[in-house]
Image (cartoon, rainbow, N blue to C red; front, side, top):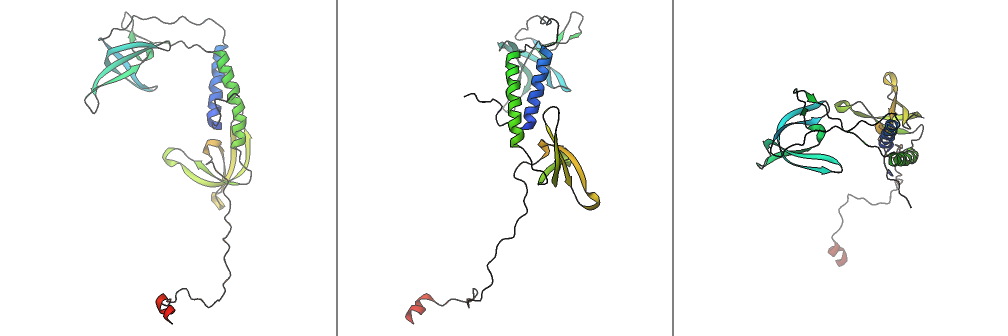
Amino acid sequence: MTINRYAGKTVAALVLIIASAQSALAEAAKPGEIAAPQTFDPLVVGQSYTIRLGKIGHTNTVQATLTGQRVFEGKNQYRFDIGTTDDFGAPEFRIVGDSQVVRYDAEGNEVKVKIARSINVEDVTARLAEAQAELIVANEREALVINQQYDIKLGRGDTTRVVAAILLGEATQENGAKQYNFFFGAGFDAATVKVYGSQVVRGAPIQEEEPEATEPDVDNGFDPDAELPDFEETLAN
């Protein structure tokens, strides 16, 4: 029995996986030869280099000393001490790849490192098929009921709020994701809003609570607030 590697994932996660696989396959299908990988002089342990830290759009460069290097799964990895210490006084280090080491040409200009990626078309195709199959299951699992009331999240960040809303309808987008049309509010402030599944608070639809059944009032002569007689005194009598 083959188990789908994406079993149990949400619709939102599966949509991203499918888009990534389709993008990879489209890239692999482009005509033309693959550019030869760039070659650089090997780095020397003990030497100081400039490395780039942080995420895209928020990077900074620091001077660091190379203390070790290895090849892991076909890629170069470098260990750099960055000249600061942690709370215990030990030197802080970073493990980086070729793209994070700043290289310079003979004229001192920075050379942009391009990392060649190989795409296993057969594996990506199989992953795409599994994700698409699981998306059908996930859509059924996360199905909502028209005219039922749900909690939905509106806004972003600190302005996010949760409101109760009635589901009016739904539509499936080209990428397989579903969009829902909800009605919320009352009077002049009533409005409709279109949201995606990730904005719906999952769980059973909110049902109106039925009043609890109560016993009819019956006068049986028992006063619950009356003081009870002493047990031993009752026996004596």
